[in-house]
Structures are given as structure tokens and as C-alpha cells.
Length: 257
Image (cartoon, rainbow, N blue to C red; front, side, top):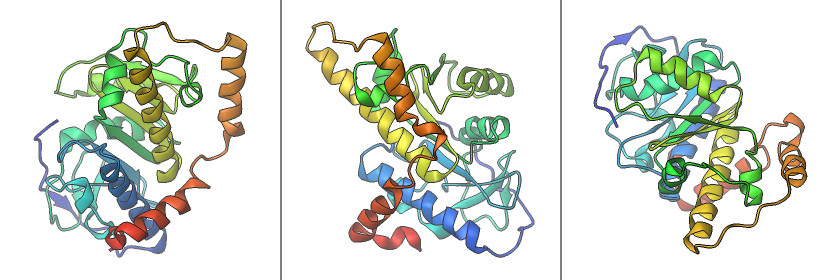
């Protein structure tokens, strides 16, 4: 959580093109889906996405709106410093974006960065062993999951460097005592990776409640399954995303506005 706001703005980059419009719709959908699944935390946490054709510009939720209030048109465009591009209609949580900005700047493939305070994800991040390879969902992240130690609320440039190092080239990370993070080459990929990670954490929390030691697949099966689930570098979410958009359209299509 953070309360640092940035009402300042710089000149707008021009009218919204079709490519940016598509990203805005996808990003708004990710916010709505997160709210639908109960992954939101009041007005806190963020999902950010790069603006196509505008290096150094990103889209993020207006600070003060709930996730289920986000739509394509009210997403804020900002730069790496959190300065609003265009006329500000809402404030932006600059400190909250600092985490996202560090990842966007360090990873060329991080078109979308998703950070949540999901309960199951935080619970597993607190466990010394982290995510165990006890489910098919967890095996998607076998040797592909970073861990970052908790450093408090204030996010400094120095911590940004440490966080990026903790993430490395992984698609996801558990922030100890804090939450979950995924990166994607598309909004859909970041979302599907987050859904898989949260499911893995939920399974682990419930499994360990029984008190018995969990059954683990053999190391060879763990490695082979992780390779299979990685899908040879394919962009995840391409098949799932249209179905998720259809689901949202049936419930409330105003995310497209």
C-alpha cells in the first residue's frame, strides 16, 4: 500500500490509436477479472501495461478507483517517473508504480506487469520453503519462480535493483510477506500466469492444512512437466483470453468503455 500521488502532467502524445485501444481494453479486462475473482485489495495493487509505439509510456489504474470501476477510457497514461501524460483526471499512485517501473525498465519482455496482494499468494510467500512442486499448477513455475525478501512499504531505487535481480528472467515471483508478481509479453499472458500461480498457492495452502507431508512427483517428472507446461516459449493466454473476454461481456461489458 502507498499514498504517494502525482497530479503533475506532461503534454499528451496524441489521440488513442487502435493498438493502444486494444491494450486498454485488455488491461481493463484484467482489472475486472481480478475483481471478479476477489484478488483485489481495496484500491491497492496495480496491473500496468506498455503503450504500443510509445517507449517509456505505460497504462495503469487511476488511484482511488476499485478494480471493478476500471475501464478502457479511464486508465491513466504515465511515464517511468509516474508523471501523467495528458490532462490528469485522477491521481496516480507513484510509489505503487515504482515496483512496476523497475520491472518494465529491466525486462524487454515485460509488456505487462501484474502485482497482487492475493491471500493465498501471501500465505505461501511466508512459508520458508515457498511454492512446493505438489500440483500441476505449481510445476509451471518449477525452477522458474523468483523470491524477493520483504523490505517494508517504502520502495527505493536500490530496492528496485534488488527486486529485478530477484526476478531475473523468471515469469513470476513471490514477494515475501507481501504478494505475487507476474510479467507477460501480453496482458493475457501476465493474467494467465497469475491465475496459474494463485491456483497453485491455493492448492498448497489447502493441502498443508491436513498436516500430513505432501506427496511430491519425482525430480525427473517435475523437470519434464515444467518443460511441457512452458509450451516451448509460446505466448500463454492466446487461447484463454478470448473466452475470458466473452465471460466478462456476459457479466458487464462496460470495461470496454
